[in-house]
Amino acid sequence: MTTDFQSRTRLLIGDEAAARLAEARVIVFGVGGVGSWCVEGLMRSGVRHVTIVDNDRVCASNVNRQLMATAETIGRVKVDALKEHLLTISPGADIDARFCAFNADTAQTFGIGGYDYVIDAIDSLQDKMLLIRTACDADVRLFSSMGAARKLDPTRVKVAEFWKVYGCPLARSLRQGFKRSGRLPSRKFKCVFSDELLDNASTPCEARANGSMVHITAVFGFTLAGLVIEDIVGRK
Image 1 (cartoon, rainbow, N blue to C red):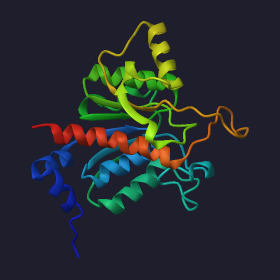
Image 2 (image 1 turned 120 degrees about the vertical axis):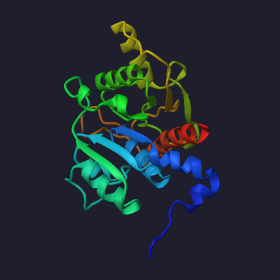
Image 3 (image 1 turned 90 degrees about the vertical axis):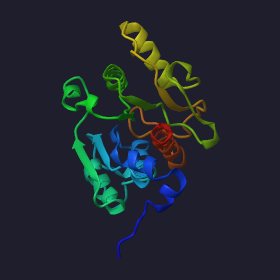
């Protein structure tokens, strides 16, 4: 039996906006606790052309917050496990899964200028700075996730222009890095962030690891997806 899973979407936003969602090209860098839920939101909303980029494999500590991380997918390449899941939602979707990192060596291989939207869910500070500069210079719509760890209150998740983000150590480090380099992003862009910052209640097993939970990372991810959807639906 053929089912139309977009009927409620079209009922809310109309056929023309739904068609624009289906035509949009989105690339998501980092499909962990934030990025995986962003892609889920995009796919269920009718976006059909998505590139997902990550160079990591699923591990046990991912299961508490990453969409494709389960007891059965531990050890698998994240983008492959996520693509498999997404195709159960939208079997005909165009999903390009790239098992690689975004960095100075690979940045030019993605053809960022060919996308309508870039989602930044990268953890690495230097790579995040490079992606932000690259997307801004390419003049594509960029939405970026700030730090989602060490937070428990979903009502404190917010959206602001990058230079107006407050209470977020990652945003502060990025701004300091841009200023030190003398190369600021060439235009403004919106970020998802929270000004909450809790201390870890126990000593992490991994260096630089911080506690995080799905009800926060998913809100970050769905908010990023919402920014894309809102922008597409709002265009006339």
